[in-house]
Image (cartoon, rainbow, N blue to C red; front, side, top):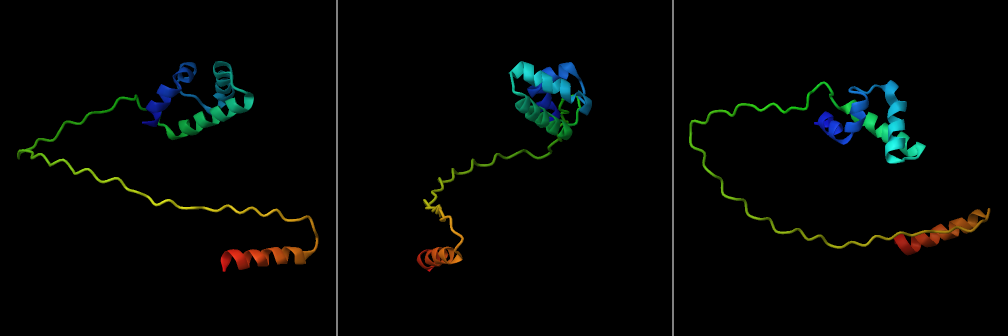
Length: 125
């Protein structure tokens, strides 16, 4: 399936090389730069994505799906009743707090201890 999707999405690259190899990386990167007007960094990332997908694909397949012959059924098939529609799930709203502490520029450890002690007393207890 991945090979078929790659051939569909990157068809123009497969016209350059039927089976792209690692040595063709610069050629493919150049194609991304020219066709998509991509920056060098973007073209490199596009090429990396292509090669990552290429590593997962089996290009030896032709892309044709083999159809299996259906098994013969000796007993008549009974239709199942349609499943009932499930009611929508309602989620409760939750609150999330994001507390930012801007500490003063000091080397006095007692200032920090006092700040964190106050936070502990007021937030955790």
